[in-house]
Image 1 (cartoon, protein in one colour):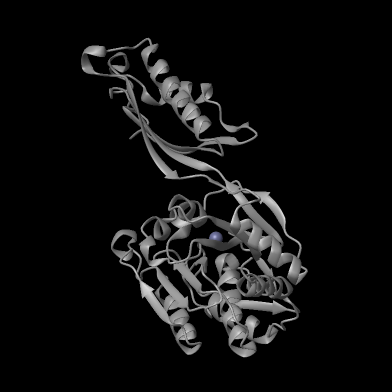
Image 2 (image 1 turned 90 degrees about the vertical axis):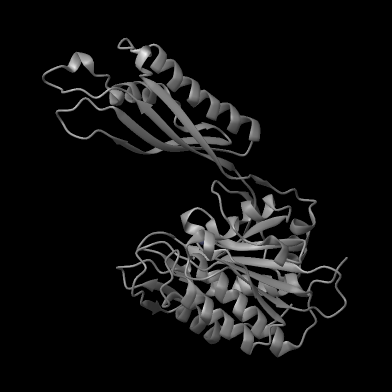
Length: 383
Ligand SMILES: [Zn+2]
């Protein structure tokens, strides 16, 4: 496999993409750029769904299709997200040698524009070499960074391929085969308001109850495959009012569905017990009380070495001479959602680094490597 990546073209598309601001819900300019690129490159179809009605984005998810050459029964999809985290206004790419950074006051946007640039270069190369390839679909989603909203509201019937790869992981030469499922938790503790100086004995301090429960709750790494966190707490109105209401937002993640349930239930019980045992009970008023709302945020992904999606990338990596490490991820991404749709989807590292920080950077050599790997995947003969 000695396809020669056009490094200048790849660098140019990557720079252009990064310099089109696309914070979550404002992806339409990137979407337009992609439509125009892939129309020029002869896409057979560019479809879109109605996800913006649900996500609040200024554009929909789009699916770009390139027919195969008849030698392949099944196609492969590649997904990337068009949005970035903030700060992402007025991004200017600074290049030194092969390293791209921002000017320092914004992110770079390599998450996920390294992946997008590689896809543009992939098709450009296929057009130049004329090499036969399998049917290819690109799924460009919105609002990944604010809760995988684009993927969650994607019309999955638009994807014809049975397996896919999400280009959305830091570093290079890694295939993420597993990622945890997560529950989002919202806990509401109710007490009773009273004047803190005149009649504190009539109040029930919800903050104190919540604090007691929090200290009993296991947080952080719970075991080798489970974590939990409380990230936000809101309480109180003023220093002289006994706080009547506390809300806590948190999460539990686990690679094991049973553990996810178990720890979520444990947190519910800790809060209920703490409320029950609180000395200032006024049960006739329905306080104190606690309530736990659970949202199944995303399902787990758990691919095995024998799965076709893994076999293919390993075979391609051998042909291209680009060894891949199989790794287990700790976060949720669009790939969790695609796997939940019944579409086995692995995540490929595509050369982004220090993502979500002002120190973010990308290396052109990594972009070249991931492009060569993609090229090997789509030209790999069915076995
Ligand atoms: Zn990402």
